[in-house]
Image (cartoon, rainbow, N blue to C red; front, side, top):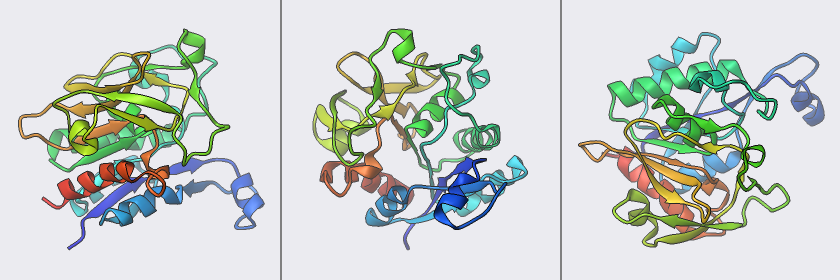
Length: 249
């Protein structure tokens, strides 16, 4: 039996999404997800199921027992209020409904279940915030090197990441150094409780985290976008393979 993997989605207030694609009209809001997430989970042997942003955020808790694993996808910036910081004018668009639901969901999963978790980009940052950590609201304006390389195709690697020994990522990649893409202007600042940083860029920015647990639970976050690399770089599919393998247990 293939494991059922919940995947969180983006919520957009912009009716241009529908108008430009001729799928909708004025004043419609949209829930959407890049197909790369779906393809990567299927390719690794899972069955992806999209989790919408509900009108009542608490409804999300009721689907947890239907899932074998959950992937928190990329998207909008997280409201700095959730990590007790002042709101900077460098923060991108936020979606309070998504923030609220996903924080409810991830905290319940971490505290009350053993469901495997994979966080990608925003999902990686969400995991850190849910565990009490904080973020650089804008790397460039806070004196760090910009990591948002929009001019580069998402299925190409752009910089290297250094992986720590004795980590799940070392097991996944069988290497201490890999190449990744990069599409983020925020990054982990203060590390959340019970999280271990297991990959860094050459400037010391945290690129991957794992949850420290007695039962060696699979809870990982990656700052890059492996889902867009799986067709061109086989090693990035290994993240999804190991995730799906954990979801089968």
